[in-house]
Image (cartoon, rainbow, N blue to C red; front, side):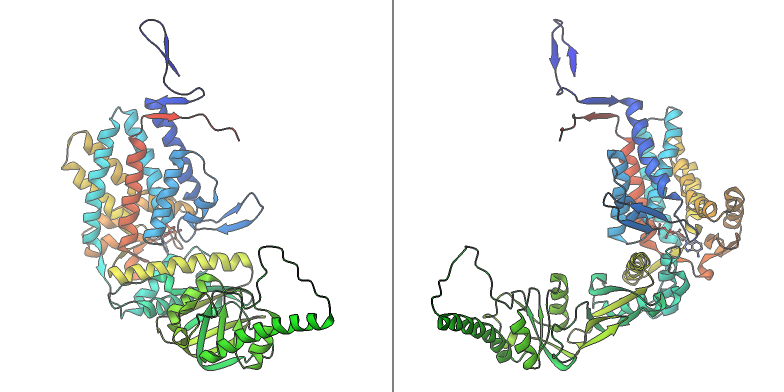
Length: 531
Ligand code: ADP
């Protein structure tokens, strides 16, 4: 890019091929790109939301209703559009649910800001208004929240059910919700914190979703490596190995010259001795179960079986870590290092059949917080989507257990927020008021979209909801839309509930991203590197 200098001499500022868009053009393009992404996931919101089929460059297919999965799979290039994807990712990291909600909200905030820009409201004024509105919204949300106790299993189940609806799991939602609540309660630590990574989720194609179960212990998707090994080991003493139980090939090419059959025999004998030595070392520690991350030689398998040791090989590193935590074992990186003190303990290690395949169950672990869920389903796509639904449900129940606060779902909270924020706007005055009003109206995109996706009339629905919320009744604030009947009902009573954090995070994430996109008025892009 060149600018004319006084003497008529061009000064080169930007590299050849760079492009620059400024002012309203830059804003227009960014807003359009970001809104397009938000629009793409809008149809998936809510229990009646549709699914998307995504096919990657290798032809792999993902069918999902999960906002963050859709956005991650879409190969998005536009930088402003990528910022919308970031909202979904942050929402997923922070709370695990509400990803579509956050993105749809951001899209609406941007749409309404475009109208304001057209009316010549300056972007910084809009940004200030949005910021004030978001802070007020969080304040209002706190007053709308209800407390929940850990003992209220029926209520906790409702969070899981609400999170899973629309994700293909509702037919057996009750049962899965029950499993999720049990699993989360099993891993709450003494400070009331929940790390859902402590819950090991294994999926197995086959059977029906209803065959899914929870195991008090760990499930390892491996089978014992030799048929003569015991299937069941009680009072297990477990060795975890991150080293191969075979003779490693040398990195350099070495040649051994053998000139007589005796030498060959003694070479083979030596090899066998070394392999047997490995088993002797394991045996000497008193271990009766071995999980090995690497390969295990046939001969070692034979000797292990002969000594009544149950072993599995090529166990994932993450599984080994979980086993270490659950059984109190230490992972050994060399067989020579392994001692009695490195072993973990479990009451029972057993190979059992799940569908057609064998899995190893490690139960009655030293750490009672070790739990696993086995998810079943007819096809791979079904179990994959089930896993995503269960992931959301576990996170949501975990968040509620940590925060102990929740709000009504089904658009109820958003309608109430819209109403209260409009009242707040009238106290502000000036142009910022316009932005706060726009923010308030943006909240209604959630009930509107829920209605649209359910084939209901969005205007009628909103009018109905507003009148309930404006009414004198104390529980008016909990009225949301029953997407199955189209009526406005008390969502708290109907059991459509969500953790408070889902809403606060969605509002923070959406407003921050919208503000950031709005404040850009100059886009300078370097020329693409040719590959
Ligand atoms: P997200 O990725 O944002 O969680 P979902 O597709 O899971 O998106 O939809 C969540 C929305 O659907 C929330 O606003 C929630 O309150 C609403 N919802 C869930 N279950 C019901 C229900 N049974 N009736 C009405 N609304 C529901």
